[in-house]
Length: 178
Image 1: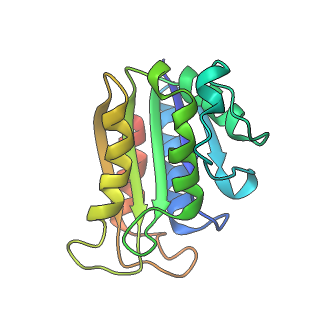
Image 2: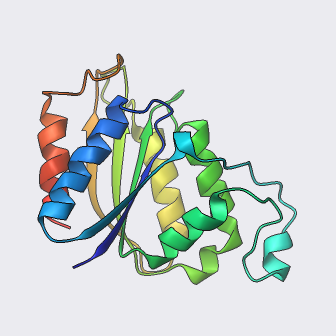
């Protein structure tokens, strides 16, 4: 059994990337894993101020918000799922704030399996390249990280449009393989 942390960056509860997270979670639970899903839309996470208070205070940030809880869950997990809709060819602001705030403890995080979920209204071949590189950039900074899978939910804009697409089955099946 693995501890799986799913961080849904979707600003819309029940949005397309959020629904893919739920399918991944369903598969991972059915495979016997412990799953925690954090919806960033329900959390308060401020942007990193670059003050480096964290480096002199044991990884505790000067900003008192929900990021400490997210970092704790991140450190406990064996497998991490990062999910975001594509915003101007990158991750959305909620996810970017979390990635930047990892600075508080990034040197203490290692040996994680990573899965990435992305959705976009556009269906062009390269629409998710930069978004994926943002996710990979974080993992590259964490020792021993291993990329295990990527789900591309392209051509979906309206809330729920992802339902019935191959990406839903892929998310479920990928969750089963954790």
